[in-house]
Length: 353
Image (cartoon, rainbow, N blue to C red; front, side, top):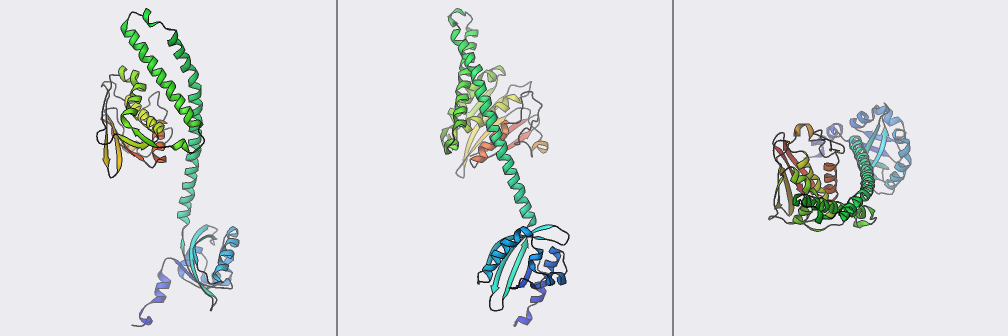
């Protein structure tokens, strides 16, 4: 079988990638139809003008520098530059080329990657926007935590002035002690947040082995007044996985936000029930938090549930920040979160560490 038995000309004409043979003089010598189609010029127009005429002016110098390597018998690999079509559109091409110095020719193939570059630019814009929002949120958190310390300290001062021995009603005494413990817990949390936000080194995202039961108990102490007021039942089982390697402060925030949501978005006529458990699968810890609350219509909220400033139940205290924070904490550590929910039935969050 000879080369005449293979339709190379047909292959050259039909392949969707841009194929060309160019001379060291900077002109096209042979192009396939795809080149004309993408650049929107006829073959005659493309042959009659220097290749640089079709390249974006800002990329000509860079292209000349890389092209000079071809004259020294070095192949051109993974090179991207912009061209301007006849209608004025800017397109991106991704080149691979090999020189033949003896014949002073370059054999090249290119793919159009305009859409890929557009998506990359959009991704960079979104990452920049996310970074900016994170900085704003960090600043807001710092200011809020800092400003709250003064009224919290004032409340604790009032407790010091109280003489509990003069209060005869045991229920009132117990309630006052409960409020005092909750306020102390709030002060400790505020101080921890402020210390964390004030750090400037890499310890900001420091991970450690954290006991899930400890974090849960701290969260329950913080939420205790609210839990008691609505007769909430919290059940947990960490027998499958009792510890995770994670940032402690971020884990406290995850528990506080998810448990807080279970109570905040409870049904008005049913006592809240929250079940928390873990699984250990394929070297990863899965944390589940399931409630019997109002639930959500996932078809309506699935694309925005973890975005900033998104609220779904019209609750007066809802600000649309909690789930965004939870998702940010997890993503920054290589984790993720999933949600299943049904209106009138409840919601289950699956946290993957």
